[in-house]
Image (cartoon, rainbow, N blue to C red; front, side):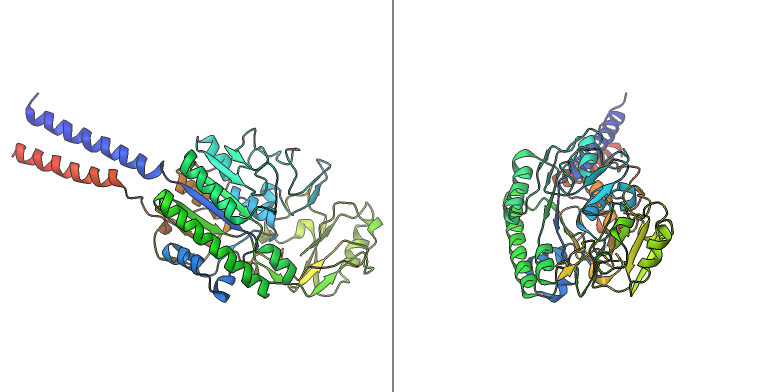
Length: 432
């Protein structure tokens, strides 16, 4: 074996070894924090001066028209869509509270492990991470306290609470990254949704809470820079927008239908859904069409673009939609109080669009995209964390988002380049 051959072999093995090390270091060390701010309407970013949020989106990825939620534009369904990359009719969470006629169970935010996940295809990002040996913490995110296919994340909050301030959640997240080497943290915060409901989307109270949240995110950036050397991918998003409420319709109280004519699995809010008792379908359907400015659908004729009506054990046989926003339905048989702001409406409406922004070592800088869908977020998370996505998460993708990512640069990359060049030059000098 000649010295030339030996040197060539060393050079090739060095390059292959360093390339392998560089690939590992540029993917497996990535960390991701996802923060959801409930009810943060996209155009709040234009209406209010929010310095930290503007900094985050200007440094990284911003959206011109926000992020499209899934229908219905409500909190629990959309947080499950964000986490799973699935439409609501596929993951099964179709409302904040609903009755499953097959399970004979009522499901809400606090429901835990009663069989509401009979389909093994449903898999949140934190479960995908756990199956591929990544450590994740899920803080107050809807359904995070549930077991999926016998698996849970490394850490999760077992009971939801609105009493925990955002700063405390942020501090907990940083601790998971800095002290326990977690790769993924997903946290949910209930504001500014609460203020949007109580005071309306155009209120001074909305402005005040947005400024306060913006200040807490400034605290986040300081801690990330100081304790993590800015080596953290951050996504800030929301689940839906908010609209002013101007009209309340109570189909039972207003005399359109009788409650004795329908079963107990009733949905209300931005839509109204019922299942008539046997023999009452036509009567109930025809009477609901008497409500002004609404469209009444048979469930199997509900528009496919909503990706909503396949969950037949959880949605009524008749679905009523308002023709205009600002309308809210209540199933109460006494006069109901209605919030000044609400959501749940058509997911294409500008007022229902959510926020999305991202920054960090695996995201490009100074990129503006037109919009994205919240079912894409699952795939963005898989890309950042080098995870193989759930094959059933087909509602979203990153096919149109590849330009928002960049390859992580690090010391291994530079060492690989420098040493490879040196060795190759030495080889050429020796060979010739």
